[in-house]
Image 1 (tube, rainbow, N blue to C red):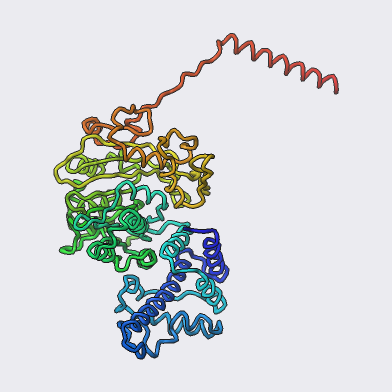
Image 2 (image 1 turned 45 degrees about the vertical axis):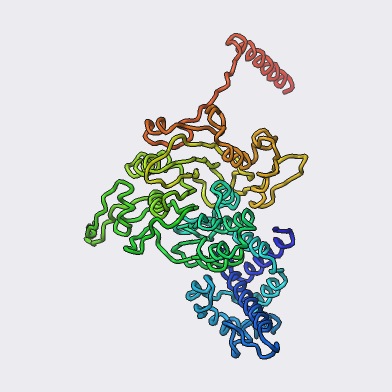
Length: 553
C-alpha cells in the first residue's frame, strides 16, 4: 500500500534530483532506477551468499553460485559504499560502479540487457549522497512496497514522448485488466503482451491481478515457471522506456519477463510475430504516421492498401535544390490494430485504447480495419472514455476496443458504455474526487484507489449511488460482468447493446453518439405578452432611477 510516508520519501528524492540539476522527469526516473538496480544487485548477491552458507557442510569458505561481485568488486556493493565520504562515494559510483553495471549482460536479469547505453547524470557528490541515504531508508523487503514506490515515481511523468506515447492512468489500466481477466491455469494460462509497452504499466497491472486472483495456483511449479519466464512480454523502440519498464516488472517480482527492443510496425521478415499471444493490452501511440516503405506489408494489406516498394521521388524547390518527396504513409493507431490482430492467437483477446477518430474515420483504412474486426473477428465492446482522462498530457477523446480474434467472425451484439467520469477532475489538474459514499468515508488520493471502490458497493448497483457522477468505473465493471442482462436497456442509458446489422448499415461506425439516444427536456416559455409586460416594468424602474439621479445632480 502506498502510504503517506512512502509518498513523502519519493517526493523528497524527486526534489533533491530537481534542485541538484536533474530536471528532466525521464532522467530523474532513470537515475533513480539505476540506484535501485545497484541496491537490488547487492540484495541478490547477499541472498546467494546466504544460500551458499546453508548448502556448505561447515558454513565456512562456501562457494557462491553465480556471484555478481568478484573479489576485486566488493567495494561496488551498495552496503559497502553507502557510508563512504560523499566525494569518495561519488567518484567510486561514477568511475567504477556505474561502468560495472553496464557490463553485466551475463547477469540473469532482464534489466541488465538494457544498460549498455545508460548515462550517469547525477552532477554532484552532495546530490548522490543525499539520494543514496534516502533510498537506503526505504523498506524494500516487501514486493508491493517496491512496486507502489516505483509506480508513484512514474506518476510524476508530466510530458508526452516525441513519438506520441504518454503514460496511461493506472486506474484505466486496472479497469481494462479487470475486464479481460488474465488467467494462470496450467496450459490454459495467458501469454500477455504489450507491443508499445512504455513503462510496462499494463503488464504490471496484469501481474498484480494474477497474483491476487490465482494465489494458490501460483504455488504450483508449472504455473510459477510460466509466470516468471513467459507470461509477460513487452516491446518498445525507446531504450529509456525499456529500462524503466524492465525495472518496473522486476520490482513487482517478475523474475524474467520479455522486455525487448523492437519497432513493432516495421517489417522484420521471418521475425514478424504472428499467432503468439492470448491477451494483448495496449495504448499504442496515435500521434503520427509511418511511411509505407518502413512497414510490414501485411499490415498495409489489412488496411486495404497495396504495399509497394517504390523509389523515393525527387522534387526541386524554387531555388533549384533537390529533395526527396515524402511518400504515402499510414496512421499508427490503425497499423497497431492490424498488428495486434496478427500477434494474437485464434481465440486471443485484446483491449486497446484508440482515439475517437478510429471509431468513425471515413478513409478506406479506417473503414477496412473496423470491418475486419467486426466481420472477420468478434468485437465485444466499445467503452468511450471521458475526454480529459489523459490530461495534462493530451486532450484527445479516446475509447477502448475489446475484441477477440476468431478468423471466422462472431460479432453479434456490441456492448457500448458512455463513461463520463473516472474519479478525477477532467481538467489539467486532474484533482482526486471523493468516491463511493459518505457512509463509508472513502476518498480517492491516488489513481490506484479509484479501482478499489469497484468492490465496495456491495449488492447495490453502482449507478444508483450518490457519487456515480464522479466515478463511473465501478459501474463499468459491474455492468460488464452482468452484461447478459443488459439487452433490455434503452439507448438513453449509459450502457446498451447495438446489433451488428445496425453497425454494418452505418458503415461500421463505432462512435457511441451514432447510437445513443438523447432525451431533450421540453422547456416552457412565458407568452410574449407576459414577457413584454415584464420588460415594460423593468424599463419603468430604470427610467425612475435615471430621473432620481438627474434630480440629485
